Image (tube, rainbow, N blue to C red; front, side):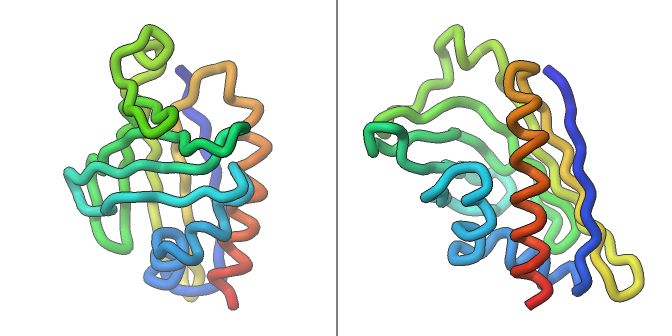
Length: 149
C-alpha cells in the first residue's frame, strides 16, 4: 500500500467546497473523472456505511463498500474502504480484497483567506497508483469549477 496526496486551492469558502463535494447532484458530476455514472448510497455521518457505486462493463452495479471513520463538518472526513461490491454483493473476505483493506481516503478542508485548500490523502494498492494519479487531478479540476460557480 502507498499513500498518495493531492492539494488544490479553490476560490470559495470551505462550506461551499464541502457541499459541492458531498451533495448527490454535484458528487455525480465531479466523480465522472473516476467512472461515468458514479454515485453513492448511504450517509456521510461518522460510523455510517456508504457504498460508492457505478455500472461495470456489463451494466451491473459495482463499487466499494466503505464506512465513514470520521466526519468533522466542513473540516475533515475519513473514509475507510472495507470491501468491493459486485452485482450488488458485498465482498469483504476474498483474498483479493484482504490484500488492500482496510484502506483510508481522507479529505481535509482548510480556509486560507477567501480560498479553501482541499487536501486528499488516499491509500492505494501500488498497481492502481498511476491510475489514481491521473484521475484525481481531473476530478479536482471539475470540483474546483463547480465550487467556484
